[in-house]
Length: 145
Image (cartoon, rainbow, N blue to C red; front, side, top):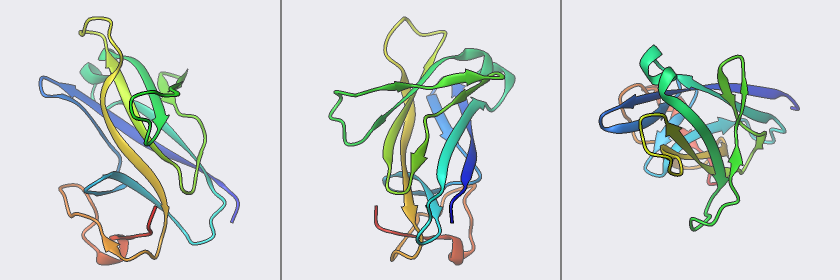
């Protein structure tokens, strides 16, 4: 299979920090997971925007880094398109951290966000069941990264 997948990622900014979520992603103890079919050649692009008008207005910068990076980068800034922040292209096996800068903080590196992995289905460990994730066990299996 050779196709392109676009994932909507929503950012919520509040007094407790920045959180990212998507209905298309699973979640386990290490972060958020996108599961691709076995043998997939799909490319994946994330489009991030604020979940609500307040959060969207606060977005100042979005960037990602392959992990593990030990804090050294290399950071890739996400581009803007029609008000969304658009990621670079990811593929099966990619692991990365996303950070978001918001306008009411002093000019510092972006913070918040989370850790993401693109994995192959059919592994053997179960995703942690959290609010907003699938409860059907057929959706809760992911492959080893």
